Length: 283
Image 1: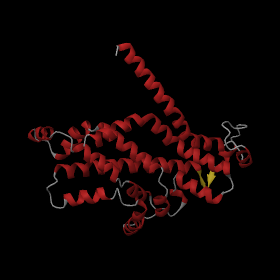
Image 2: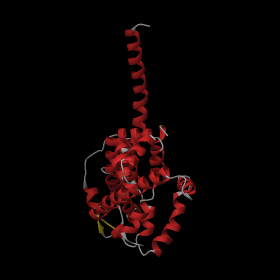
Image 3: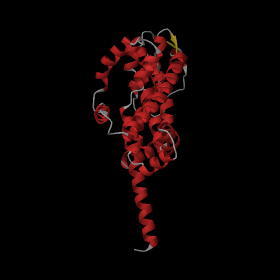
């Protein structure tokens, strides 16, 4: 087969794949687009023409309805979401990175193999079943209803630990041995040698942790004692019970809640895929 024929065949294959992928992508995006349209459409208009792809008019009054939810200003929920998610992400990434490094570096220490197996077992453990024991622990240490208690709970990350663990196992031992011979401590090896090499996985873990923590609502609802510590997903749940008939207000708050993480994932999805490959496929 000539080079021109191979080139045309490759172009036709690519065009066929795009022709298949684009309708599938639009099919998956339609529910989100339908939610965005719900901000501007009344329930009567939705029932009359549910598959309409453009609103009859652009009425932004729905956003005024969500200015205050459950007696708390919406900006408080937004700041809580940003602060709690960021703090839990930073703490979770640091703890899982150091834990995975320790278990990978010294697997022969007593109990480390069982600890690693138990940590990975939590990936298969239903997340909701952890709420009761964690609630008891948070209550015993006096952090119930506080931001610190929420952050500590959300910092738990078995999936993040797994990605770090698989990547650290692929690193050549000669690198660590050379740093040890130069007199570097374990902390210096981790922060000055290993983590710079693990930047793709580190960025992926941070993004995954941020996305997961942003959408959490049940642990926050359990640990919180007042709406002042609620985040946007919890506020959405509160509005759904408080203003169940306000279809447009619910869609507006859902749009405000999901838009930041949707944009973050769109711009960072390539980094996520590269990090997943570096942390899992190589392992």
